[in-house]
Length: 328
Length: 281
Image (cartoon, rainbow over all chains, first blue to last red; front, top):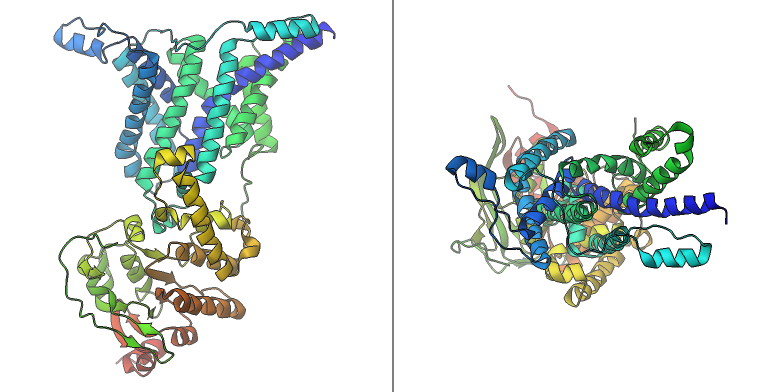
């Protein structure tokens, strides 16, 4: 096999695993969009907040310690113990559920029957608020996150490919794990939304509020449920991205990468988010691989958005989105 | 389900009676007492009282804007009257949200059809059975034991209703693709799936052609016959109302102007005036 093809293949595989990470973030958007018609701008910040909280719990950090120190002249910073990961993750899940309840209580409840754009604006506010709270609560410095997922080159892939092609592929083990976890997550969510009582109620609320009420569904419960699930998906995305590149503010910006993924996959489709993520991941790696020598580097920064623009021109509902039919 | 709290109130309930065609009408299921509903300065319903008996088909009729739909919305908890009370199964009903009223066994359809357009006919009807499913979230999430069994049981129940309303052929079709008449029928199916104690139908035949109307009439009568479902319906088509219902409430400008059997209502001078118009001095 010629070398170029091998390198391209390796780039594609890396693209696939990177795509899974994009898809994870996009998934959180799709969930909330499907259930409440809200484009949740705060999804990226929720991933950041979840990761910050997890690291905080793990390292036994005292929440709001900077604020307390500034007010009372104390010098608190840590409790002095480390929480095991197996305990810290459920604790963070509880925090995300509490966040969902607060969002329903203080934002959604007051905006029932409002235009989607108003709800969207509210989530922008939420994003900034949550970012600030995250900073005050846990501090703004870059933190390392380690939940015990393996990292570094996968020697199994390296060996196998070396034996086949005479050239070992470099694939990060973390990304293989991320792909597996994302697959499980998507399978569970799909079964949940298609075949269970709450899943059906969730889809019903997304479709028609009035009709949902008439069959005995509590809108508030469903909203809390949706935001809790989105919070948990944000936590998973936060863990993956945090393990990969540290927990830092820029984590909230990966939400922007989810936008082209959503435009490709369609805002209402869970499989769409996955496929969209994979296409973007592979696309940007391959584009970079072939075009880099010609136009210079850094194509990864803009390729996704260009692809999204092309889709907006020719297929605005995305690959899997519901068709937009407007009657005039 | 009768956990409404409060004290038992006298609803003058009696043993009921037999209709001419041999159906048994029971005691009072629900009583509206002096209901007044205002929107700002507009009085939509003015001091109206009437009752609904178990097993009967009760119609609410009246010209446009008479307050019929508002009345149905009061019964189903979508509107809360400023004055008056709703007595259900002998207890005064506290202020409730619509979903709580639905959980008490009051199912409804809407004038402008409120189906879940993106879901299949089957899924739409299955939502009607949501509060018959008792498995908890955890069982649901892992799809184990009780959750899987319940899904199968409820599915069987839904299939019965699908057969009954003759919509087998569109079972898997997304609702958004159905014609208007069939949508109305699916909405009825969803309401029936809840096995309601009281079924509220808001203009079930509006916008239908003659054939569809005949079908719908037959279904409403069959449902009442077969399951003994207490039905409250709003309808414009006089012929239909007079044929279907056991008793009729007539409203005009938010007031009750007649109440009784179709025959009594037909001969009521006030009702005739409201419908045919009368010269005012």
